[in-house]
Structure formats: C-alpha cells, structure tokens
Amino acid sequence: MANAFIPIQELVVYKLARQLSDMAWSLYAGMTFEDKKLIGDQFLRATDSIGANIAEGYARFYYLDKVRFYYNARASQSESTDHWLELLLSRNKISQDFFNQYKTISKELQIKLNNFIKQTKDEGKSK
View (cartoon, rainbow, N blue to C red):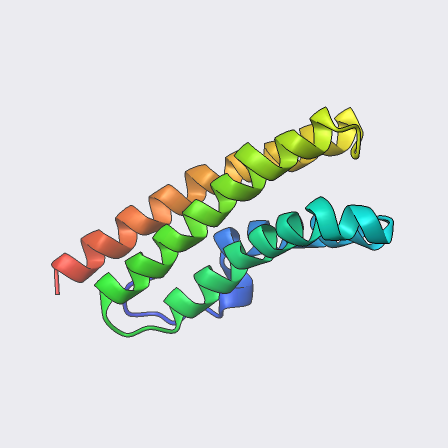
C-alpha cells in the first residue's frame, strides 16, 4: 500500500466484504416481508456496513481517521456474524451450509482486516 494507490475494488478486505454483502442480499431477497422486518434488515445493514466503512476509511487521508473506520468495519463484521448470523441459524432462517460459508468468509475477512488495520497504523506512524 505504501507509495502506490490500489483501487478499493482490488483490496482483498473489500472484496471479502462485498462477498458477504452479496450473500446477505441473496438471503434477504428471498425472505418474507415479516422476516425482512424482524431480522433481515438488521443483518443486511450490518453486513453492508462492513464494506461501507472500509470504503470510507480508505478514502480518508490521515491514518487515524482510516483506522477509526476500519474499527467500525470490524465491529459491523462481528455484529453480522456473531449476532445476526447466529440468530438466523437458531431460528431456522438459513441452512447450515449458508451459515458455514458465511462464517468461513467472515473469519478470513476478520484476519485480513486486523492485518490491514495494523499495516495502516504502522505506515501512518512511520511518516
């Protein structure tokens, strides 16, 4: 990342966030109106917020501003996976396969996002 601009669409953390958003949207689109209002809206909002916060942070100049948005992305990732996804499974609104696939991508994103935050901090401090 240092001294070279990488388009956000090429960042692995952003690509993973978009994968989760696509999965969440596919699920949401097939829900009943009641399920959308009770759980779907919150799950979709939390999932979409991951990529949105990465994008907003990436557009910031100062590294601490960037990191603040990346922390928000990490919190949204936790909300979507550790809370809403678990509820969807326990309420039989998703299959075990959907759960496993979402969880796997989310875990990879969590690791990459933590590394991305550390890298951003390290680069910012060295300037």
